[in-house]
Length: 173
Image (tube, rainbow, N blue to C red; front, top):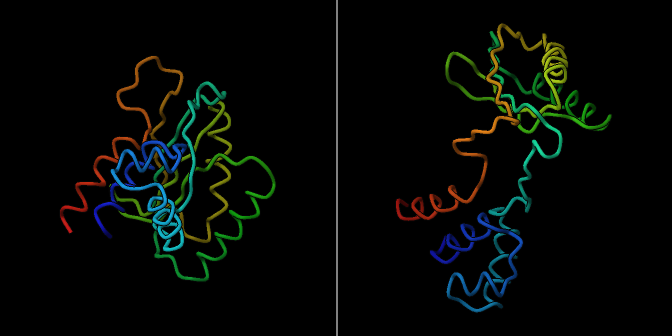
């Protein structure tokens, strides 16, 4: 990617509501060039989606949970597809608390789920729901809960800081 494309992605991460004209001014290029670049970056899948991050507590959520899972066996394609079907059916039935669910590794675990909850009961219900994936060989779960009502926040979720870091990645390539 060109330097100006890195800058555009960084600026969009800071605030994707800005007009192409405002983005052009921030980067130092013309508005039509920004419009073409945005379309190109979307087409090439560098831009996945546009969104905003609310204050979840103001919307009635009390807990953000990071849950680690340990499975005794690796995931094959058939098991992954079965899990995907269960998740998709759950999403269709109504509001669902899971923000992210991915495989990975660390701290002796091989999967991660980030979820958001109105209360502790909602968190326990989701954790119990996750137990239906026994065919994957679930051995252990551990969770870290964040109280969204807490008055002290050290660094709340935002992409503005990451947007600045994106520009340093370009320099390393």
